[in-house]
Length: 305
Image 1 (tube, rainbow, N blue to C red):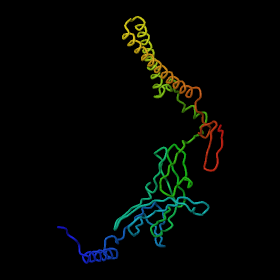
Image 2 (image 1 turned 90 degrees about the vertical axis):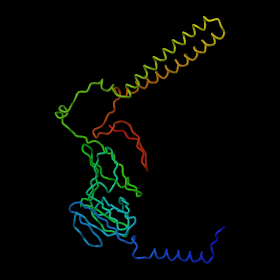
Image 3 (image 1 turned 30 degrees about the vertical axis):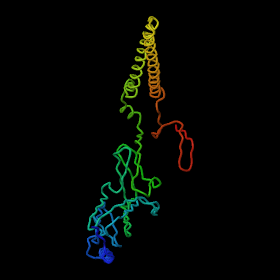
Image 4 (image 1 turned 30 degrees about the horizontal axis):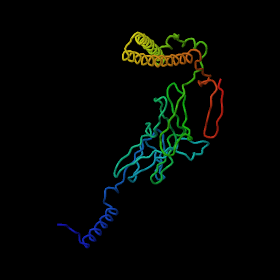
């Protein structure tokens, strides 16, 4: 037996659903309206501003509305003028939730660096907030630097940042220490040239070349042996079988010898690059020689010496 809804029942159900949705969206007692808390753990000596009130303290707690917010971090300024660019740190917090942003740790930005041991150091000032956005600057030197022991310090450049995220890749160059002749003699350590041969690519290419050429010689001997059988045999089927084996071994011999020659050629190429044409560096640690540079606006050749 089929059950059919009355038109009046459907109308009452729609009216009830509409009143329920209106009540849920306007009720002051629902849990979604409970405010959330944002705690900012600052660096020593930082002045924070919240609703035009200065606060000098280690941790500032701000009452915010639940939802998605954006932390705009201004890490640099020039000639007392803040640049109109910033690093974006989006975060989300639920009803009656609590979110802590610790400026004393490297949580504000995701820095991928080479080497991986690089540390982000930043200073600046806190500017205030707008609905859904918090503007933070820490310290007074107004700089963001990437440091690592034994590598050059690199400041963050805004042209390399993207407004869509907070991830940045920084490549650090090794420090170049200008030592005198005495220091150079003291730190000099003799390294045998034989150690340059004990690299995986050289050993692999050399051993592969020997194995392939030896296999080619073996297949060539087998081909000659089957060819002699082909000349001595009288039966038609036996001669065809010997000729077929001779052709197969001859093809294998050619393929393995050619592949071995390629492997030896690669071994010689690496050997020449490592001993005859070693990579040279200038006084700043950069590779010397002719290079091509291409940027977003121009391209050109450069010779470093």
